[in-house]
View 1 (tube, rainbow, N blue to C red):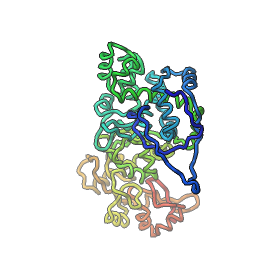
View 2: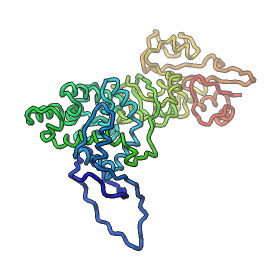
View 3: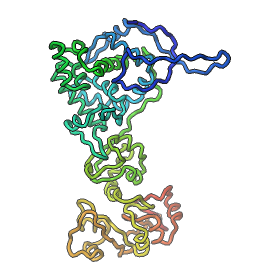
View 4: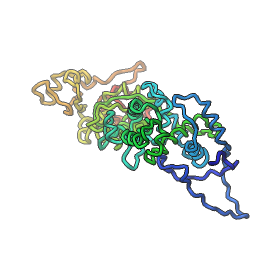
Length: 456
């Protein structure tokens, strides 16, 4: 086998994305013969790809300090050649994504006392794409099949696939690999079992006459698994020697800082984005396990990742946001959507509605709205204090001016109540929506309960 690369400048060609588990050093794509006109020369972008020899790579590997030492051989070297020369685009794609996941990977591996180098396995499994699906139905960064996923607490339904959750799947991968290491005694064998299953590894051990290392049972393993471990070891080398192969990442993808919030209800991500001025794409990016853009009733208690920049706002306003998540798209409403007919009557009578949610009692609702329990019962024809979740209560502003005040500048202010919109407030106080927006320097029609608006 050649121990060196002969070219100094190699044009980088776009190569088809070949599933890693099917790549073989012996199965190299044929290069097309292209003839160029001497008169018209296309402008190609050339990238310097350093030469390297087998001996140089071997020397570098011997100097690596890792928890998973390995020795170079022809098979590993062929994959190093492939990913540093012929398919550099794949390696660049991986480099652009790694900062999004590797800090979390490393922390999880340390927590489970697994070598941190195991994180490189996700490159071979998924190319660091949390939503990738294999031809046989494996999903996520760590390519769990449904049955194995369920063993580690990852469940699937029409709307949620926990295998695509980066944290859940990484935690499961660390546990599974640790159990495989206990089973077979070394990490290369554990990696092989992760790919083809413990049963196939045991079969290879029996057919080899009881050998116990990966390279000793290599010829008895499924063809796909023979390439799997060398690819992992190739990336373990490459990502520790980027400069030597002229990999300079220009546009890395960094993780979005987030906090987890439980809403304890079913809702759509686009509705949450509408209420909180969040970007739907950010929510989808942070919550890749949400398949259909919604949190279903079956997963109502799941923690949703929210960009940290908005987490404080959500925590402070969780009650009215939760209240509004079950509604249809809003038309200038602060919280609850009122049908047009009810909005018209609200404008004239000072009446609003409130949808009962889990944990509510009449006393709490009455206190929130500055009315008495008796009034609530009278307005809603209630014979007792019992109310049910989802029930709509009418709340009349009988006190009229209870939401009006005067600030230090002598301006009249109005405190926004649940169900209010700029249109409703404008009708109550004989103003136009534009006048209210100018008085309060509002750039949009969004308002929220508790907000004080200048009305005169």
